[in-house]
Length: 149
Image 1 (cartoon, rainbow, N blue to C red):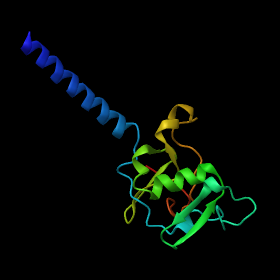
Image 2 (image 1 turned 90 degrees about the vertical axis):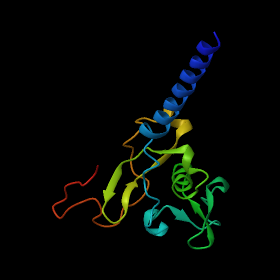
Image 3 (image 1 turned 60 degrees about the vertical axis):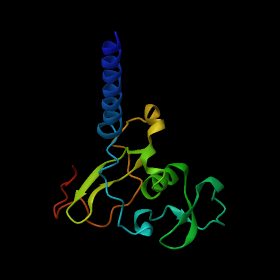
Image 4 (image 1 turned 180 degrees about the horizontal axis):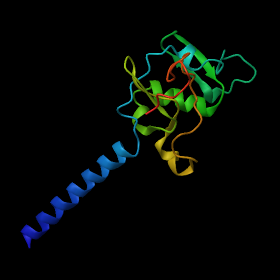
């Protein structure tokens, strides 16, 4: 009876570990993605406002380390992407809901991040319209075919 109980505990623990591994890796490809070396002003071109702008909402104000200033992002969707992309504490609760582009120099870059908690409300869960602006000719060859993975 003791041995059976011990075996059941071991099986439960292994099952929990496997479930955690599946949930955190295969469904949400956020961990192998590189944090972006692309300048924020380029990634979020046209999506950042000064904090005093009349369309700026308090919940969309973020501190941008690379420029040492606060900026207002244009909406909650862009703010979520920014926090998932650059905040190391926030990133584990996010997944790539956009497209993933692979580059030799930069690794894998996600075009949009979403919160894992909202996955059941996302339509579609992945492949959504990009939030970030990829630099000129990134992900395309000279005749315009895609290099996406």
